[in-house]
Length: 363
Image (cartoon, rainbow, N blue to C red; front, side, top):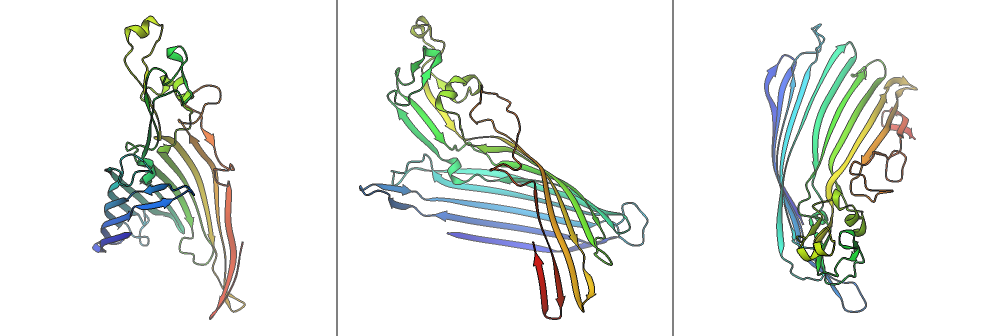
């Protein structure tokens, strides 16, 4: 179930040398919820429950576009200067089960709130006749999915997990007492953060008497990416020094020291997802539009859109090590890989229009 209510105000505020200063304001309240549901997933009577969950987002947005200088009638290198500034604030509240338990009909619910502030700042100028330069910097966030907030917990009272503790003579974990194992998500998960820096040139921006050609470069940086914990339980214990907050132990007792142990018994293993991933993306976009008139009595327009992604580099901190855990893993180039983009993508074609008839081909 989804509801959305918003109020938007927009229009010119005052006159500047280059034109009207326009302002846009927006306030929005968005709600969505999924009711609880019972599923029969087996021939043997077995009820699995999907509990109620919902989210509410309150947003405020403001944008200003300010044409500072006119394009015509001035020889300034900043002629046609136009600025754009936008800010946005989101306050989201998610309601979901405190612990993921598919066999509980009415699990205790918890509420998780997150605030996000984003902005965009951009500018464009016409330094030469028929050439426009533009650039911008923007930030953004991605709110985690519901499942990322939910933790699976299981208490082991035996050694069935099958992992050994090198600090306690390689004894099986659980042989000295019960311990808690946590996996899946965590209510401590934060939003992913991103930023985009872009710069470009447009030749013949009005598209008059010739082709309009634009080329833009963008660098997108994503940090605090959400990573699932892919190390095995044994790797987590073996590389405990790199994850001091994920292996929780009891205090080392005198009897433990007498046996030569260097750590107390394990009370909790934390294999939940975390905010540690990083990605850097480089993109070059090319665009061509060439409207021609009076070709066979109609308007003939060739066009092309080409995107080149020379690099999509990611770095993961919660992946299994190849030869030994590295707390500062190397960047992985993903262009051309199964989980990455193609280096080149494009579309192009021609269209011909005369009166009410349009013919075209696109590749």
